[in-house]
Image (cartoon, rainbow, N blue to C red; front, side, top):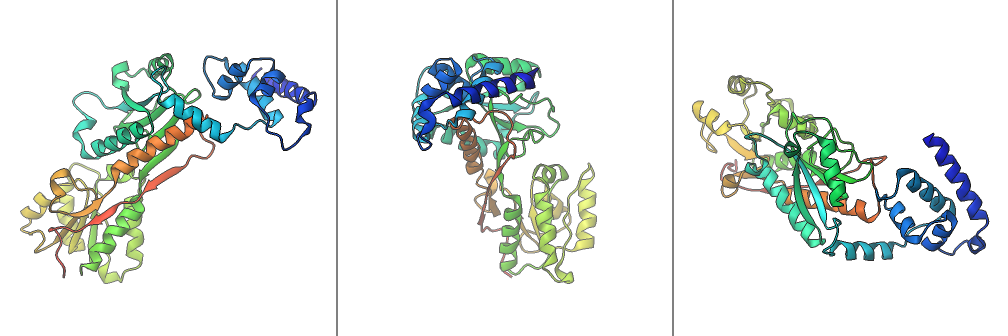
Length: 367
């Protein structure tokens, strides 16, 4: 039935197009008024249908969109940008709000994690710059009922959604994208095939390994938990393994990527087998483990961090992942979709990758 109605709408659109004398001039821009006349509706209805406004039925939207496509209608980009700017600074309606959908619950709070708070800072700052505000919607507040959350967003007139801050074990029931512009932050809700912004894991690991080697270290080992490596899309381990290809066999050091509770025992064995002279670390408590092995940082072994915690930034060597920029880029994707009326799942999802910066520190010595 749906296919039949779409074909009927398309046939009607072609019929209308042939009877519009104003379309004889090929280089003349088709106006919204002409689309409205051909479709037998008002210009405001056409405007809503082309924006996928849920106040217009899905069938009527498809019919009007088919008419516009047959007539060769293209929105004026300057007018679209002006209207978006006017709407974004409006105090009425829900266009000013972008929903940040999160999936934490219980005693777990994303606000306690440095990585999340840095990304959130970038999200809010960029949204404010563009005339939008960000409001969090936690799935837990809806008892896991994603459909109820969708109804709330529609009632509020909120059309832009940013998926962010979910746990590794988050539910796989995702937001229906038909009536929303949806973008993803980092690898949160990674089952959703949407446009995303993320840190450039391949680049960041290679940058760190390059800088560590410049200091004279020969055997640098990557030390990251399996769960976080998986969240990175395996970019971290892939970059480290590719790095090894360009080294002599004597300088190669296999990554340590534990996936279990007995990580410390496995780390001790790995240290004995691989004999690294430096480590590139994320999250695991290597300072404690090294101390128990009688190794001093940096006198006996150098340490750098893929992402330094707040307390590590003053002294430790490592990367600034520019996570504020990752958050800002995610908002740009949502606003871009709202500006161009790009609702639903993208045919070819894109990923914006933000490169980090290296910072020297006391945990590495020149050799």
